[in-house]
Length: 287
Image (tube, rainbow, N blue to C red; front, side):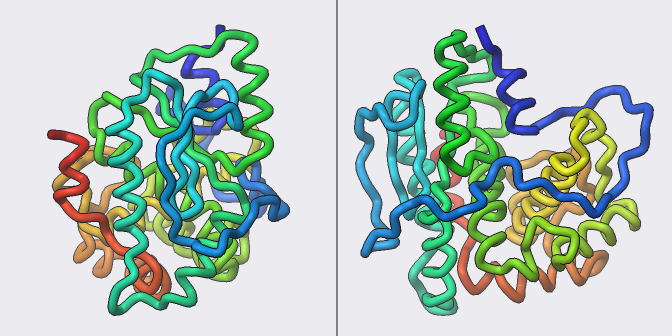
């Protein structure tokens, strides 16, 4: 049987270990989890929200819920309430309201649709796949943009949900919509501000030494920093954690003061297409 740790390594989500070799930035960035060609269908309504349905489209998962082009998939042990709460979080991240550049937001949602963005959901940290399910998983992951997972019923549930939604939004939506600014490449603004944060000792990347493939390691380093920029700019960390991590900045004021170029990247782009989910919606994960 394949265990959670094996899948997490497949998705290149690695955790701290004893580190001998210093991790440094390189020019090579591998888009291992994102489709390189658009294969998805763009609907007339980019803001379509479906219902939870039984599904055989994403084996070994048995149900799906599509929201704004992001498909949530889970097995029977995932609660419907959890799926619906994640859907509401995604909806609130893409408001159709004053201050939003609707045309730009639609461009981002088109890319999320075109590149078949899928987020698998798992119950707890001790789930396993049988050998047959592992083979099915490999096919599903290869046919879609799958850059992380969300686990239900674990500590720091709010962070777990927001972080892993953002991984898919940044790796797919922002990457293809703002390639010069958010591209997973060595020529983007994201790369340069990540380098600055590392050089100034605000972002410790040594935990990623476990990723042997240098290009994949770089993709993960950029992905994680993109998440930290947005999560910190939304001022979610002090309320929802974590208190300790590879990232030392706690709030938007501190980010603006210490790494103004990172905050400017957020302010020049993300605020035009996204918004922070409400505390009432995020609170549904801890009630």
